[in-house]
Image (cartoon, rainbow, N blue to C red):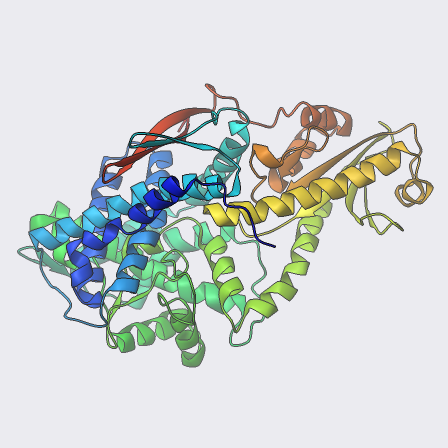
Length: 537
């Protein structure tokens, strides 16, 4: 069925002009290896300066997240437009390094236009054009707390993971780097060894991964299991962390130009393979398969994204590892997205995802095992299955839960797709709630309750609750761990139901977040958009 285009021909013409604006950047005239190096080196240098100036962990997380997201478009422009291979630069070049940052900043502006045009095309918002300014006809303030909730939950998870770092091992790592570090003008080098990598993993990388990893290591794909995939990415992330740390130590010890020329770790393909095999303990064939899968643009990925495939192949012999691209805080999410896109693994991943809801259910059961609640999962004829019911017979209260665990969306099209999953869960919960209101006997029998109980339905999502447009006044949507912590803390299902119905779990504007107005500019065109600023670092 053809979907009606909700944009005017004039806006479509402007969209095409904006889509092609990047083509005037000088890097597009260079071979890929040359252009990609200038882009990555410039962005790594820029993000290092931003992180050094950041005053709190929340600001640092935002810088990293935005950097990784903003790399998507500018890397894609080079990938689509540049000829293959080319010479790899080894020094700062004022014009090309500036061009790298210009392309990166253009990518940052571009994502606001993408959001506006995508939502406008679907009719989710109406775009108005006044001379050279595009802006939504309606205000975004209504219901923005749902989007803020998703941001806050993600931030809390990242901070919990980061707090687990081993300070002593980090000190040992710094000493090891310092002892082997050599500085020659604006270049630096150091001797990487297995002890350094082990310390980096134990001090920083593994604690972060263990806090945010919820999928089982035993999940078997066609060429490796999930545990091996994690181990390889952790190993490269540890090497990336060491390289970034070595650069900082070199800067502190007088390395000129902040070590710009060596900001990107560039091992030969054979060297990285040997190191990862040695440091991870994974077999060479499995490591090679994983390296191939996480190499940018490999495996017929139709829409390559450096967040998913952060290993950049500059030419047939050399990889580029941009340290802060590997040090983002969403490795589990990115790993899941990649496996779901790989032609060889997509079908297997789809089958395994059926186990995800069972993992959430097991977590509820385990964490609430000492309570006086009954936990039930059951099928009911002519109704959706009861994914999980939490029942307090003493309070005559029942919470019916629809469980959802999908890949956290990071861009507009993913948000639209995941929103449909949330809507589906809400519809299923509504069916069960309405059946209870109508004294549906099979449902009452399965739950072992009667019509005198108070029953509420909700959707519980592992990582994302959707935006305001998909919410229901009858069915709250909340993140899984947040609900578990609330029930565990109150030990009262009745008060938890009140808390959910009143939407007290949502953050409040002015207390937990503020809305920032953003004006993105490309050429002569601007778009009025918005951003959420979290309060309280």
